[in-house]
Amino acid sequence: MLKTWRFHGGLRLPAHKHLSAHRPIVNAELPKQLIYPLQQRPGVQLKATVAPGDTVLRGQIIADSDHFLATPLHAASSGTVKSIEDRIIPHPSGLSDPCIIIDTDGRDEALPPEPVEDYRLEPAATLRAKIRQAGIVGLGGAAFPTSIKLNPGPQRHIDTLILNGAECEPYITCDNVLMQAEPDAIVQGALILMHALQVGDGIIAVEDHMTEAFQALSAAIEQSRDRRLTVVKIPALYPTGGEKQLIRVVTGKETPSGGIPADVGVICQNVGTAAAVYNAICRGLPLTKRVVTVTGQGVKQQQNMRARIGTPISDLINQCGGYQDSVERLIMGGPMMGFALPEDDIPIVKATNCILAAAGSEVATSKEIRPCIRCGDCAKACPVDLLPQQLYWHSRAGNLEKCKEFSLFDCIECGCCEVVCPSQIPLVQYYRAAKSKTIAKAKEAEKAAIAKRRHDFLLERKAREQAERAERSRRKKEALAKLKAAETAIEGAE
Picture (cartoon, rainbow, N blue to C red):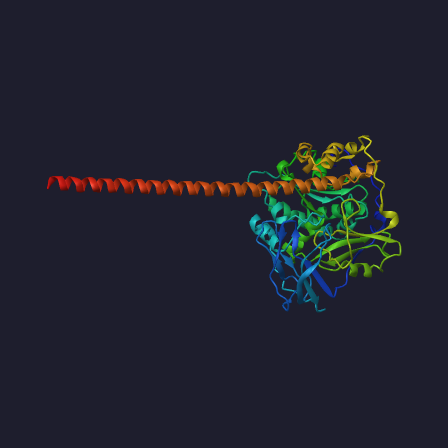
């Protein structure tokens, strides 16, 4: 039995897992239309590789980019590209962005799969390329490219892979049911990831209430006969699913401020990501589907659905019996770190792990914000051991330098401080705003620095050209003087 540790702060929240945890995965129906936003993550915009009128097959790449944080986007079914137009995308801003719209044809024809015969004979670079080509990203919500995580660089020594099965946020159960339904795929995916990283230890972390998932994974590991992999139970404490918190709980290591897990020899991947890696390497299937929890008191039938990426949320809600009259808000993600959606024609994307149709009793529709009473509860709850109260004062005052001094960018925006705040201050909003202003200020400073370098270069070039002209003029004058002196000497000799 592996020893576990404790991180600072954290909360035990009402889980609401019972709404969907014991419901098997249901295959969502093929939608009439698939919608694919070209913005993959902030600062990463894909370029469409198809045009309106083109026919596509399931598994075909429809967008890509040479940006190092980009991964290809694949059609989740066969059909015709209707248009490339602005649609509202799943983003906290609620703004529109270019999307590829595909009308499905109902035939669901696919490109032939290209599996790897034996991944153990393949070099790590080949596996990384295959994983990138399959469009695989972290399916826990962050959607960071998996191939990038698998390449930490020669300066970092990785000794442990951790598969994250901790669904610490309320309502979400998609990983729990996936671990019960497909433990062999997760275990084999973990072994592929360990081979790509050349690590000797693998740990699958599940919450202590996930008895069925623990048993299923234990049996799959036993069947694999690979003793390098272990499954461990951890406390169901929010936000244990955060990378740095999970690493602390499982290994006792502290990820340094501003650092990444690879700095302490650990790589974390979601259990759903491991299953997707297995499908890509052993079955030759790109990432076109994922399991999504559709839950909340605002939907008639809560369940976990294997849905095609690009499916409009309205289709999933309809397949769950539609909305209850009590529905108040539609949230993508969980109630802590998710964000409200303005409409349900928005598609699910690779990062979508949950659709929460919340009734009025499940969300705080209005808060009476009162002055901070300096109780310190926020500091006790912060899982990163920050001083949220100080960050609040400095972010509110616009003192960005002080915010950085108090490690603003170590904040994971988990919302623990807000939950315990007796004054109901929207603390995370202040931190997000301060982060945005700091990033914008840094970009402006970078632009100013570039402009200054250009200006200095221009002045230097002008000065150099002026000096060169002066030197040419001086040489010309010297040459003329010498010529004149020579002519005078000749005349005198005559």
